[in-house]
Length: 121
Image (cartoon, rainbow, N blue to C red):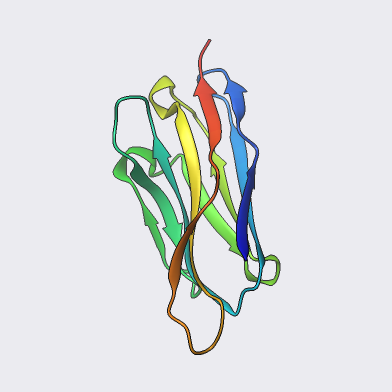
C-alpha cells in the first residue's frame, strides 16, 4: 500500500504565500517524478510543477517565477512554495508521484487526496 499525504493548504490574501507538502509512505522501492497538479471548479486538472528524482524541473507558465518545487528524497517528500498568490491560483491542489513498489514492477501513478488553496481578500 502506498499513500500520498498532503498538507499546507488554506485561505490566503492575494500577494500572500503558502507552502504545500506531500509525503509518500508505504511499500516504496523507488520514486521517479513527483509533482503538483491543480483543478479549479469547472476546469480540467492541470500540471503546476514537477521534479524528477534527478532534479529536473517543469513549471506551468502561469506559475513561473512565483512557485518553487523541491523534494527531499530521503523523506520521500515534495514541497511547493507558492509566493505572490493570485485569485486565479484558487483550486484543489493534488500531489502526484510515479512510484515503483518493487524492483520487478513498473512505475505507477499515485495521487494524494487534494488540498484546497483559496486566494481571496
